[in-house]
Length: 224
Length: 310
Image (tube, rainbow over all chains, first blue to last red; front, side, top):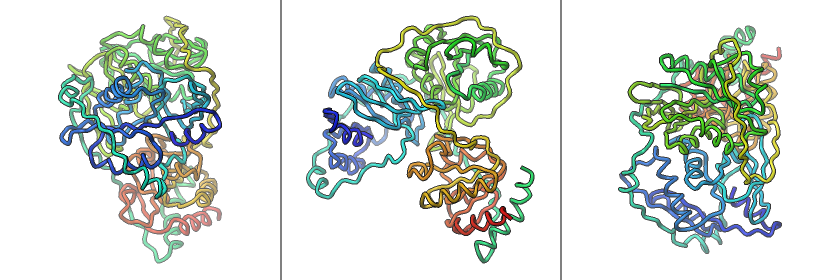
């Protein structure tokens, strides 16, 4: 979405400087270098400790991002995901916005430049789509945007730009983790969904379809 | 403990919100003290026009259009530090619950499906892409939670809210220069469909998605898709099934080319009868369906369609 926005900026006389910030471990660096090759100017990794599990600590991630923006590198717009699949907290962009005192738009599906101080933001709301021209700074959380894949850089760009070193931030983890959290994970339990899984046998797909229809679907469809 | 519900009346699914909130409070808050329902709306006639209620009294938080900043400003002035605030499962519910708790120095958890209020407030929600259930202790009030999508529903009691207060939002923030809203294109009754064909990455292309849509219509149903199919734009995003899309409970769900990822399966798990068609016998969906066909979906669906048309 950021790259699309940057592409669109040419006709609007707006220049975007794209930065990426992630909290992660060293193994993520190979992927991060791809972002340099895609023309991101700054790629920053906040060093995550191997033995510290922060999957359920969205307030720490928001703290780190806010610290980077206020102390290290001021930004006009922050674009984030809505939630990770592991923690499923669904809170980080909202907490960051509160911490920075910025407005936040969630479920963003498209962005267009307007001018240096404004963006046109399309987002999903409950039951409708909102198209807003908003001033910066703001936090935007990306929702179900179709066709939003990370591009593959050219080999030339990979060779030319992919070797730039990743910028590092090493936070004081002891201090961050000491801070009392509002919500604490106390238990995790695996959930397994199972049904009968009766296998339909047959020599051909057509035979299987007939058995499926006659034995399991016909009666049910007639009742509906 | 006292609890309050927040209802977003800017949304068209106000009845669903009320039914989910009512079922949740019936299941988990029988012992707790009922507070006020806050209804976010354009004017109080919306509240007056409701013939069902989920609490005796309500306060209308009124603004011309939905604006989270203005709502939070108004709601923050009403918030009691030790109370529980229940928000709906929609986009606004998640947003408002987290931001209200942050402003009031309380705690928040989104997409909650279970609650226990004893000495401490603990809640349950799905984590790890719906593979695990996490239990979370909330340490500070106000306790703000939003409900998980697809929760059980219960018809609220008949009657109208007694409106105790009208709060008008005046501090509309200046960062929005212009705003237009458009009603989302209908997903053709997917939410209420009795028969659903659920297609995944394995259907391979848009032409097959179109064919499945036609087949679903022949069966009197609707087509829904998993995330990869929606992200490839084979069908509109409003046909997405799963934790970030529609949570369905059809009588019959036929999956085609779906692997059965937990986040998708959550959207069909309440189906009465599930058929899985997949070439991969080891795909997770093949253990989560009532009946499975290990074969390519194209000839199977084609034959099914012919049989149904007969």
